Image (cartoon, rainbow, N blue to C red; front, side, top):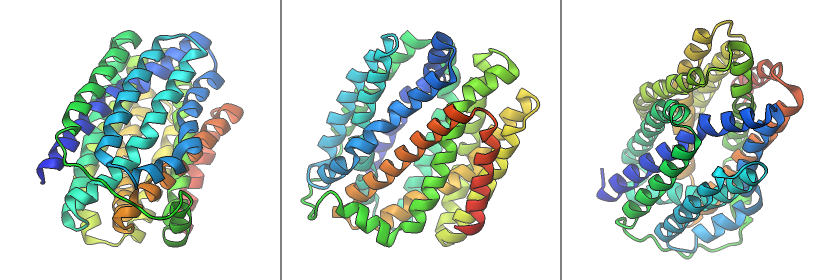
Length: 359
């Protein structure tokens, strides 16, 4: 793999690990402080708002500036914002919003930069597969560590991870661009060329938003207040992604995207349904582990298709459009979860199953 990819890979691994330390620690902290599903769901909503408000502008900027510089500045912003998580409610929500403003610029820059480094052939599939493996690893390690360490130590660890990421990204070659067209061009291009992929992506992230918002309250109320169990659930999810990532890489190399999208959605829907009706914590954790297998396949397929289907000067805006779609879906899912409660888990699983049959 190219040297610059190795720098990006390690930077992504370390900063993602810092962020995943918060995946259990932050919602559990909010739920314990408030005792409210709504307050916990608002945390997810706060994560989604920046992509909706700033996303199109961020994509335009990513297509005009040095993407390496965008990533460095974004990480610095994120590090400063994370410190604000130590404040109580409602200030914590402002810190979450500020961190995600930085991520709105970082994510499309990173997604757009990868094909410039790895090309659009088999090396790109291999790179996306390794990043999916990376994501599985941080899912495995981050949540249980976060549950054990507690908020103050987790926050400072995340700040340190952003600092290390910045130092590694400075070693990557510059990637300046002068992309033409307005911010809305990415949305128009995506709707014309990648409409089906956008719909699949939106359905998945809406259902994922429902499950993410309800997971901590669902497991706490059904199986007792044991944050370690929630951490183990995310570790099982990480194991699934670790196993699924190399398999996904091989499948994406050999098969077209359409059947892979169908199979992965049906698998995710079935696993979500099992989780929604889990009678014991062991069954819930097993369902979490199984989600990682089709989840890896879906995400690697989507990622590779986006990167291959967009010219370099458009990738920032197309990526920002998909991230805005992710954010809107997660926000919608968290709102639905807060209003409906745990029974909506079954409906969300059914929606993904239907999507796998018709999209």
